[in-house]
Length: 88
Image (tube, rainbow, N blue to C red; front, side):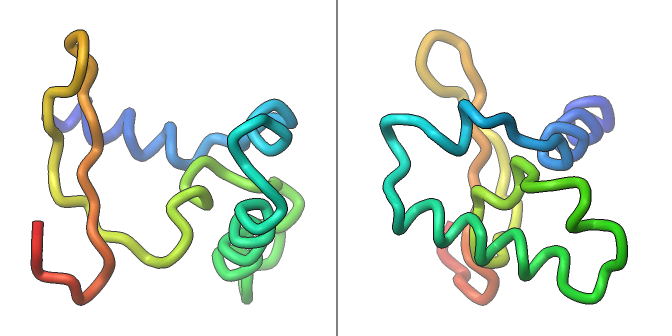
């Protein structure tokens, strides 16, 4: 289990590429929310802004990891919830 959680953590800390930011799915409002999450994560952390937007910034507001669930074709999905939301 440690390996799974460690790899998830590493993936969430990976920077995004232009193809993630400029795609057919995200609109200008989505990009603005992504920028807001990025600025919030970097606030007060010198050097973080130079690293760019990370995968975790797509989550937006603060989320809590709730678990994993088997998805389609054997893929696993990350389940999360908003902080303070007790429904899983």
